[in-house]
Amino acid sequence: MPAHDQAPVAAHAQAETHRYTMHFPEHAPRESDPHYAAFEAYRRHTKDTAACYVGERAGAAACSPGLLELHHAVLEFAVANAADPRALHRDFPEIAADASPDEIAAWLESSPGEFRWLCAFHHRGHGGAHTASHADWTAQLYVPGLIS
Image 1 (cartoon, rainbow, N blue to C red):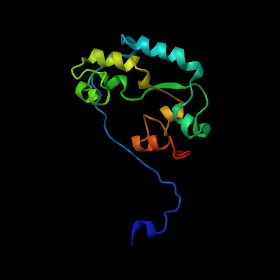
Image 2: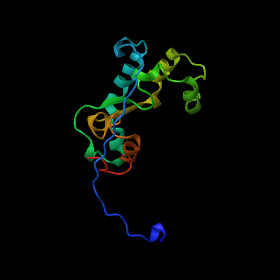
Image 3: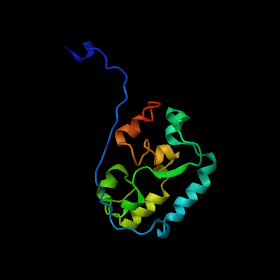
Image 4: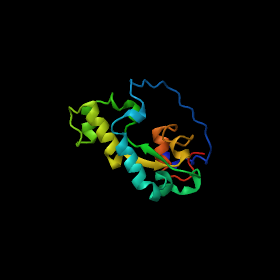
């Protein structure tokens, strides 16, 4: 029987568990990064008008109240010095294919497209960019209440 002729699956809740090991390269403390000032400047200049990136799309009902947090959308500081510049260049041509770790860090901390304001739930909570699988986190941008 073709899939479109089958009965629909009823709405349901399903627990998900994801477990793996991250292998972080050696990196300096965040505050000693010479490019951190650019990150802080962006934060200061945009915080007064910031809104949760997820809440702006799927509605703020799932957002946690309180201060918003600034998230690196593409590459976290802790792994930037191990990033392959050729791989980054494919998606971000402004990064040279032979860019040094310092050049990658400078881009990371000064590129407005690299930053997203998120509420604590959508940043570090169980529906957060650092917690939920990428597929689930991205889907919640368009499906209100997907992750609870």
